[in-house]
Each structure stands twice: as structure tokens, then as C-alpha cells.
Image 1: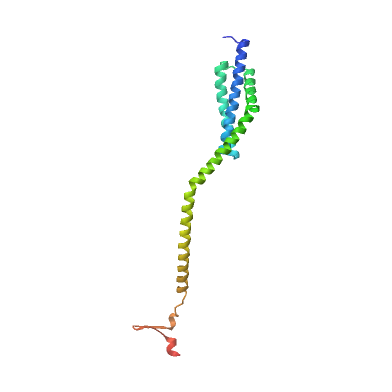
Image 2: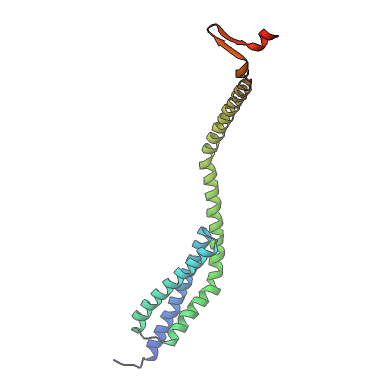
Length: 175
């Protein structure tokens, strides 16, 4: 096992790490586009950032195991960072603009489809609500009638005489 790595091998590892950093930049833009599509809340962004960091950590570990045999080299880490920065400040700008346009297009299409799909439901809802309004008005009128009908007071019990022919009032006989 040799601890000294030849220059061509170091150059190969550096170039692979720059390419790997570039790929991590692409993954970051994919996460950013998903963020634009799904959520704009702070908690969702926080979760996505943690998920991205975990993905980067696991894939970087696997990359270091496969390329350097698990040895941590400064130039490999610098190459990953350089590749990520090159992507982020060059193609990343173009990718995020294109991603924003695609996200706006997708959201516009989804709104359009939602309006088309929801139109029959809106018509049905409007018809049913009109029927319910008419029924409630009819029932309200009948309830008002019965309320007024039952507001008629009966005569006081003291002044009534009951017999088998009906109800007679004492007041009418006395007067």
C-alpha cells in the first residue's frame, strides 16, 4: 500500500471531483425547482435543505470511497467545491431561469385544467344552492305563518267553564 499518489492519479481525482461537484450543482437546481413547484413556506425549505445536505453527504462519502479509497484529500474537496461553484454561477443561472419559466407554465396549465375540471361542479353547486335558497325561503314563510298563528293566546283558565257542550266563558255571562 503506497501513501504517495502519482501526479496523473491526483489530476484524475481532481477532475473527477470537479465533475462530481458539477453534478451536485445540478442536483441542487433540481431541488430548487421542486421547491418552486411544491412549497414556499420556511419549514418546507428547511426540510429540503436538510435533505439536500444529506444527499450530498452520502454521495460525497461514496464518491470519496470509490475514487480515493476512502482517504480524505484537500484537493478532492476543493475540486468538488469548484465544480459546484462553476455550475452554480454559469449554467445554474440559465437553469434556474428556465426552471422558473417551466414552473410558471406548469402552474398556469394546472390552474387552467382545474378551472376546466371544476366548471361542471360549480354549475351543479350553483343550481343546488339556488334550489336550497328557494326551499329555505318557502320554509321560512311557512314558519313565520305558524309562529304568528300560534301567538294567538288562549283565554285564561280561571274564566273558562267546561261542560259537555263546549267551552264557555264566565265573562260573557256576567256582562
